[in-house]
Image (cartoon, rainbow, N blue to C red; front, side, top):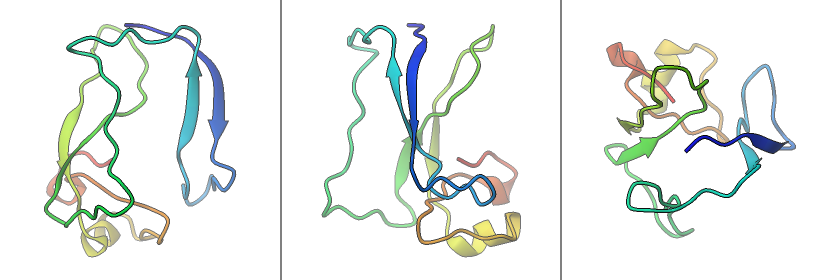
Length: 107
């Protein structure tokens, strides 16, 4: 399904330099049609915690051309590994996931 974004609401604390709070809400021009392949995301409840070995799914914003948008299975990486890849480190308001320190992708 291809939709246009009608409205983008950035997090009020988004920082362009550090990328803290780099999350936004996007309102689509037409609602999505849910089916077996398209479902709403399941979010954890407030009491759930993830360990450093938890498997998660991340998806990103991409320009749609001839290459499909693919989800990737990723795992959380610890702050120490992230720091070596990104010397600015992460703050308490960031969550880093991926395999960046192993030559893969980071989200």
